[in-house]
Image (tube, rainbow, N blue to C red):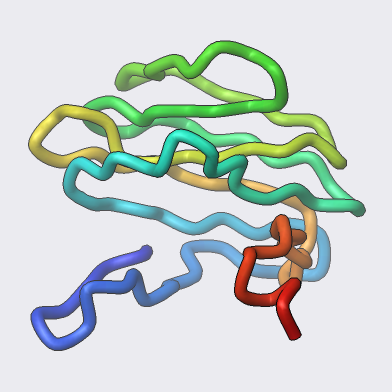
Length: 117
């Protein structure tokens, strides 16, 4: 489960399931509004999917329009596809994130700061 504490607003990862070929994390939080140009990240080696357990989750996936997924929905993203999941407008939302690797690398777009070095 990803949770935050008063002293640390950033989520702290907590594994729900982890073995050699499956990982699942429960991620719960309050509404977020990502930046308009934030593409999120992608994974070279694996697809990812989410089961929406509570509320709504906002998704930006590749060139698709931004959309909200509701409780009970399943959202899938193929490997090597940019994606960003953020907590939607409901007071709280929860998703079960699932993929096939424990240490799945997250590939991010370089920031302006990192390109100045």
